[in-house]
Amino acid sequence: MKEEMLAERLNILMVTTDKKINFEEKKTKLKERRVELAATSEYSKMLTMRMDKLDSNAAMIVCAVRHKMMKRLAVEMEATEKEAAGKESTGTWYRVNGYAYNYPWIRQLPRPTDRYLHCSSTGVVGRQAGAKRRRHQECYLASSMGKDDDDGDPTRVRWLMDAARYAVAALVTAVTVAVIARAVVVSLRSEKLEITVVNGTVTASVNTAANPTQVRLLMTIHNYNPSGRVGIQYVGVNITLLYQNDTPITWISIEDGPVNGIHVEPQFIRESVVDTSLNVPDDVPAAFAGAMTAPNGSQLFENAKVHLKGTLQTQISGLNYTHGGQPTEYLCSPVAIGVKSEKLLAHAVDVSCEEV
Image 1: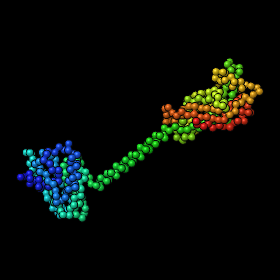
Image 2: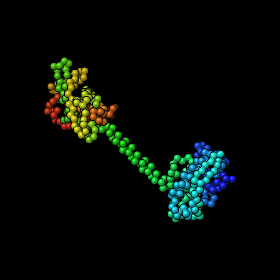
Image 3: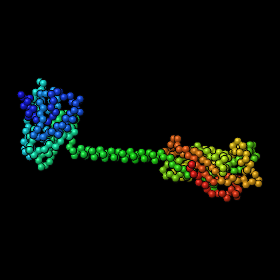
């Protein structure tokens, strides 16, 4: 009889069941029942649960949650509101399965002007009281037992504020990641190198006194780095001299390294002088050496070509460059190849090389 009277006085809006509630396994079902309760709950039709149907642990949790929520309600209400609503403060003893508990609680009597709105995701109903439209919490469900927040369920305004903060944080994170990714891509991007054959000529001279005969080739290349932020180096460079019909004459390698190699600082021009002696006929065809020494010949090949093949690497820091790099080829045309003479000097115009 005492438990039945207590159940009437508590007037708790909760799920009614004859079975013991395992709150770890039935959270999903409780969420579904909250929706049903939200649709049917009115101040004149409240569901009641007999406290003696719960085990001792469940009953203790129910009353503890109710105590916290009602205590918060009492703090939020003003004195005039408490008086108008009919505040009742009691200390109630109840006994379940041989265990006795005492929890002070404050019961808010419903008024005709009150209107229940809806249950939120954790089961607490917001109620509008009087003209002040203050939101109070008055719907207590068993699902509230699993909530770790001691302050109760956040209001709709707080939920919107949290959502706005999360959206702003996500936007800032996305922008930060995009900026960092862009900086990494720009820093590691292979820059272009502009190469020019000075005077557009390759000077050749034949030394017939040497054994075997040697041909000396001399050319000057200007390497310009247009980038204003990183250095560039062109490594593993092989230069191939070609006749007008693309038949190769010979090839020359350029030494790597910051001193003798093609290593160019930002917005800087580095001059590379290629000076090498090649043996005939192992390195240079005898026909080419003969054309350079023919007394009645022009000793000049016009519309020739210079082909460069190597790997461009971008500076990371100090003397450190990107590994691997980007294979890059250049073609310089037209170029004049011959012995030093007025005919050769007549072609003294710088020739820019195009990337192919």
